Length: 386
Image (tube, rainbow, N blue to C red; front, top):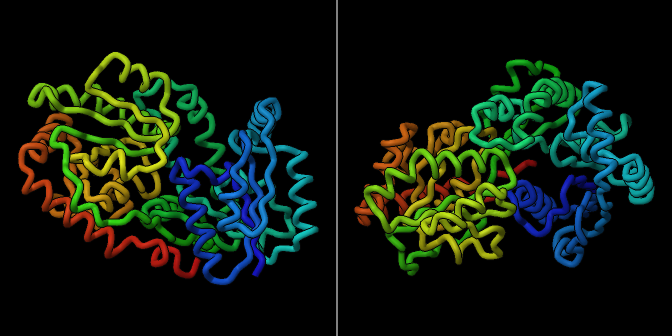
C-alpha cells in the first residue's frame, strides 16, 4: 500500500518526542511492506538523505514566517485553532494537492491536528489522524506554569478553539490515535463515542538496555526532554526553584543536567549563573550524556499523553523520581518498585537524596524499571495494528 504522511516539522534531526514517534510509526509501516511518501514543512535545509532511510519519497516546503502570523490571526478569527493557521499555507496546499494527484496514495496519516486542514474533504475516510495528545487538556493545566512565555497566554485563547477542533476531528475521521488511555477517557467527556474511533497506541523505547558497565556519578541528576515545550520548561523551573535548593542544602556537590533541544534563554541563564546546573541543548547521543546519571527527575505539572522521557531514562538504567501526573498514562509504574512517585516538594527532594546516598536502593530501582520497560514498551508491540 502507498501511504502518504504529512508532518508539521521535518522529522530529522530527531530532536523531540513528536518526530521520534512519527519516524517509528513510519518504520513500523515500512516493515509491513508499505511504500511511504513524506510531505513536510521545514524551517531549515532538510536532511533528505537520512529521511530516505525510511521514506521512499520525500517532499518538503519551507515555512514562511509572514504567512504563519497572518494565517494564525485568520484562523483564530474564524474560530479555528491558532496552531492550524500557523502551519497553514495556501501554496503548500496547492503543492500537496499536486503530489496527491501525482502519487495517488491509498491511505493518509496526518501528524498532529495542525496538519488536518490540508486533507481534502473527499479523502477524510482514507485518513488516520495521529493526534498523539489531547492538547486542550494540556492547555488547561498550562495556566499554573512558572513560565512567562507568550505561549502561556496563547494557550488561554487556544484552549477552547482546540477543544472544539478535537471534537470535530475525532467525530469526522475514521481513526484518531492517542498515546494515553487517560487522554481518550478525557476526550470521551465531550466527544461522542458512537461517532468516533479513538485508538490507543502508546510510545515505545528504542534504547539498548545494556548499560550495566557504566560508572554512575552519585551527584548527577538529569532531566531529559525537548526544552522547546512549555511543559518541560515549567518542570525544569519548578525543580530548580522549589526542589533543587533542598537537595543542594543536603548535598552541596549535587549537579543538575538539563538535557534537551532548544532550551529557552531563561533556562540558559540559570546555567550561566549557577555552576551546579549544566544545560546541554540538543545532543546526538543521549546515552553518552545521560547514562551515568544517578537519577532522573520528572516533576511534571502540565502533561497529556505519555511522557516518553520517563521510559527513555528507565531504559538506560536510570531510576526516576516523578510527580503522580506522569503515572496516569503509564499504569505499569509502581511506587517504590520501579520508580518513586512524589508530589510534595520537600519529600521529592528527600527521595532524590535517598537514592544518591543509597546505591543499593538506587540500583535495585533502576533494574526493576529497565525490566518493566523491556517487558512492556517495544515499539513493534505498541504499534501492532496501527
